[in-house]
Amino acid sequence: MAVYRDQGVVLRTHKLAEADRIITLLTRQHGKVRAVAKGVRRTKSRFGARLEPFMHVDLQLYEGRNLDTVTQVETLGGYADAITADYPRYTAAAAIAETADKLTPEEREPALQLFLLTAGAFAALARGAHQPGLVVDSYLLRSLALSGYAPSLGGCAKCGAPGPHRWFSPAAGGMVCGDCRPPGSAAPAEATVALLGALLAGDWAVADAAGEPARHEAAGLVAAFAQWHMERAIRALRHLER
Image (cartoon, rainbow, N blue to C red; front, side, top):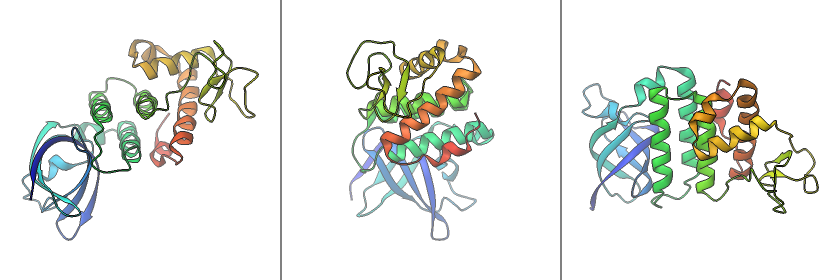
């Protein structure tokens, strides 16, 4: 069987038999990969702790008919302990992992930019670099942009009329003018729109300085926008402390 080596971030795990686990990874070169890690639930496992959710690892696998098998693992970013020790960080990381999993429905389709974005988000949460809710909102906007669903925050998302505009519609694709505004559109504050732009661009100086009202309003808009375009709920978001 073919043996290969790659970097990956662990998105989730499932128990298998008495001592094994199925590991779902987002890898640098091979996209999403599901692999068996044999014996990792035993107390004397050589690399069980390295294959916990949110870890960034370098690993060797060999290809199987349905599932690959992990044979070697080295830690590149040991983020799991710092993330799981803090509830807001943990729920944020869970939402990021769930989103990455749902944005890669096909296995073995390369997704380098999404891998780099996901690994960077886990690293930021582990370091406590930014408020966890901001990390999630930035990740959602940027990962959707990679998938072709970047929100329009300047010109009207429907007719292209130059902004600024007052209304925001997830279904329309972002900010819309008064003529194109669908029923039920939100009317976010200017500070909220500025925060959305900063989160999409990764401008952390602006994002970190945003006030709580803008953060709260932006979180609701980002969640609505993400779940509309992904056509499914992100279950972990309901547990995220805002």
